Image 1 (cartoon, rainbow, N blue to C red):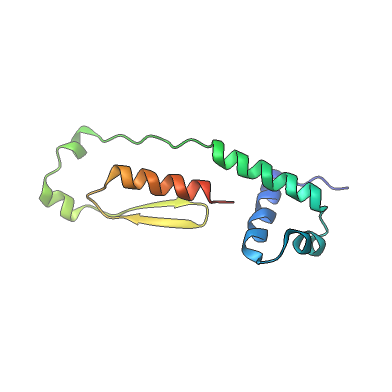
Image 2: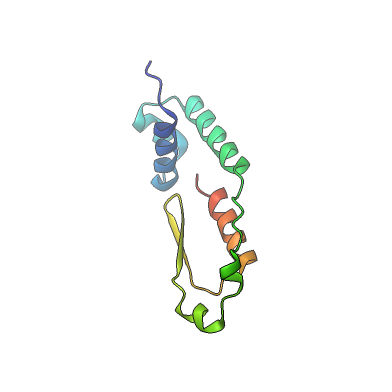
Length: 108
C-alpha cells in the first residue's frame, strides 16, 4: 500500500467535490478505500475549520487617504483555494472578513 502525501489527499478530495459522483463511486474509480477516503475528507474539513484569519491592519498612510486617492486606489485580489475575490476600495472590512471566512470554510 502506497502512502499518499497530504497535498495528494487534498487534491483527491477537491476532485471528489467537483465530480458530482457519490463517494463510493469516486473511491471505486480512484482505487481508494471508501473508509480511508472518508477519514481524509473529514480530517481536511476539520483543518479548514480550524484555520485562522490573518488580521490585516491599516498603515498610517492608508488611514489618512483622501477620497480622491481612494478613487485611484488599485483593487485588491484575495485568493483562497480556487476562488478569487476582487475588492475595489473603499473596503468594507467587516464584509471582506465575512467573505474570506466563508471561502476558507468551503474550500473542501
